[in-house]
Length: 308
Image 1 (cartoon, rainbow, N blue to C red):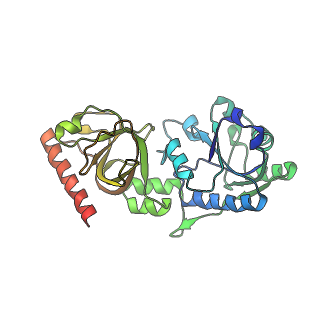
Image 2: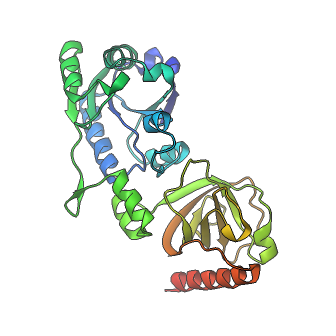
Image 3: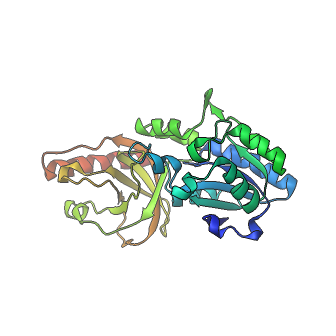
């Protein structure tokens, strides 16, 4: 899978493809159905598949303080997309220049001149261009003019309701990890590089692998039973905390993972943390002794979960 970063890096060899456009946050079962739809046309026409996405996501550019939590950071999204039939990801920098590009110019410059799209799959509610002036009908008319076909995404439903990133966020917010897994087609994961912290966990007797979230908001918070991938042995069992550690008055959100029966130096390693079950919400304790007692209970619950 090739990553094309920005319009400037689109080359002549990238001209001619079947494509889709969207955030693809979470790469859930609905997204996977679209990728399958695209792969079928790719095989039929003998053209590569291209997924067009944006960084930051348009809502993050326009309303950064009100944007919902991402399910996946860009790197996590790329890791998820590698499982599917995607030849290229074209990531456009969503900046002032792109925000002011008219819908007509977006079609002509990006879709026609740069990428030479022959088949395009988008949602029938898709809006694009300056002031969101472009819509599905405009794309259909442009397709007739420039010689590409435009089709709407197939609606993918589970339990008689459309699968969406919003629905997955709601499940995660409730701690319904099984519900989120059902919509994602896999367990919810976060990934990152293990960083040095304040060593508080080690002082408390529970050394943790610390991962900075690098996101404006987290889709999950609390204490979880987890499995960890990306180390020499996998999966490794553990307990994770996602939050701000209120007992020690921290404010910056962090992912901390205590691995069961594990004692190795893994600083700098890139790991994936898979969330299996939520144990509880984050709490502020009156003393570190109370916190230690609760962590011990969390560990025992995790051990019981894996033993079962």
